[in-house]
Every structure is written in C-alpha cells, then in structure tokens.
Length: 314
Ligand SMILES: O=C(O)C(=O)Cc1ccccc1
Image 1 (tube, rainbow, N blue to C red):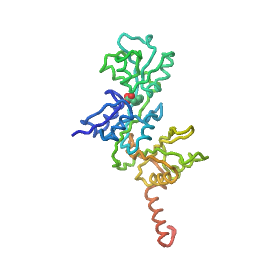
Image 2: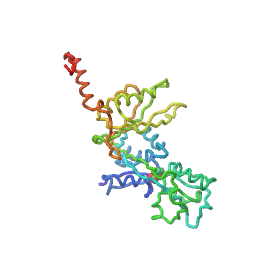
Image 3: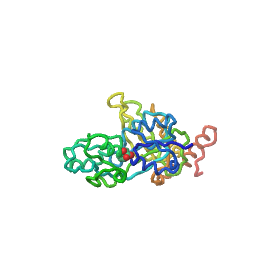
Image 4: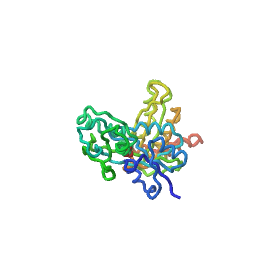
C-alpha cells in the first residue's frame, strides 16, 4: 500500500514543486488540499504520512497561517526543509488585456511579493485572495470575480490562459522555504548541517523576558535564523515566538539551550530537528563543542562524588 502525502494544491503549485524534491514521496499518493490546516489535519488523523507546507518567504517572512497552525496543532514534527525559487506571471482569460484588469486574484503571500509591480502598473486594482497560486488562476474559469491572477509561470502549459505580464515579482531572488511535517517521533539523525524549530511563550510580561529567552541561545553559542512573533490571541500584547536555531537537539549546545528554555518558559513546542535545505555545515566556536559540554559534566560529577578538583594544567 502506498503512503499519502498532502500538499497545497491543485497540481502546479510551488508546494507541489517542493514535494517533488522529497525522494521518499516519489511514486506515492499525493493528496491536494485547500489550506495548511487541512494538510496538518491529514497528518494528525493518520490519513497522510506527511504534509508539505510553506513556512517562510524571503520577501514576506514567516507564513503566518502556517506558523499559527503549527502552534495550534500538537504532536507534529518537521522532518525536512526544501527551498523553491518563486516567480509569478499575471494571467487572464483569453481576450483580456492589461487595460481590462480591475481585480486581481492571488494567494496572499504571492500578492505581497508582487505589490510594487501591481501598484505601479495597476494602481487602482482590487485584490481577491485565493487558496493557492494555481487556485487563483483556475478561479478565473469558475467565476468572474477577478479579471487576472498571479500564478506560477508554468500555468500556461496546462491551462488556456494568456500572460498579460511576465515576471511581475518585485524581487527576482524570491525564495520560499517549505517544510515536510509528519507525526513520527523518529527524529532525523544529526548531519552537522541541521536546524531546530521551536515555538516559545514568554513566562510573563516583565522587562527583559525576551532578552532572557535569547540569552539561552547566545550563552551556548547557538545562532538563530528565524525569530518571528505571533499573537497568542488571548489578549493584546501577548506573543509567542517562532524560533529556528542552528544545530540539532542532539548537539550538546542546542540540548543545553533547550534545558535553559524549559526552565524559563511555561510553554515550549518542539517542532523538530532536521537537515538544512542548503546542507551548509553549522558554524560555531570551539568552546561550544560537544566535548566541552561532556567534560564540564564529568568534572561536576567528579566534584559531587568526591574526586579532588585538580586543575588540568597541574
Ligand atoms: O504553493 C503554492 O503555490 C502556494 O500557493 C503557496 C505559496 C504562496 C506564495 C509563495 C510560495 C508558496
């Protein structure tokens, strides 16, 4: 029996392109869903073994719908990350010209990435949000609410659409980071080029609480590659923080930082340790090597068990 992988569809989305990078998903069943919550529900219920979801864009930052869904859904683990270069074209039903366009359908993350082009070329346009980049284009056939849509360039190979403008993305180097999420508690092995994702709530509203959270990483030489605040939702001014830290939880310095965080924060969600998409080895200074932590622990154990505390140089 084949495994099922959920992804934001329909076929042709960037999320599908990210899933195409996962060797173990090839030849398996791919299930197209309409939103991130549905993809994660598939994993929680066991309907799918894993789901591919967009988590961060180089222009727009964290994908808020994804960060909030991950914070709300317990028992999930990120097992891998994948990068996809994204660019958009403006498409329309045949016969439409740029002058006819009043309303543009687009996924909100896509819309944010093409804002400057749209403001310059269609200054009075309206925006209708779509569930995905491909859905935005297909909606043009289903309704007449939008006159044009932002879509991946390959869309015109499969659908009868005209391109009104090529490459409408404001930044040519836009990259989106996707993560593969599963229910499995079996963690990917450390590779030396890993990332650890967490969601941390601050203990209370007091001066320096955020600084204290960040100190847990800095005093162990752990670099952060993402820090994004998201409202907890119960009151104004209450935030949780989504954190990506360099390294694997089985690296001593990351484990030690997590112990510090656990003592400090009332709520931590461990989202997983997994290989970085770029496979770039994590850099850190040598005093944070695994061996240094092990030696310090042995020294403490020795002190407690009554061994004489002899400085190494003697
Ligand atoms: O996967 C897609 O194509 C999506 O619709 C989500 C998305 C939106 C914007 C950038 C990358 C992915």
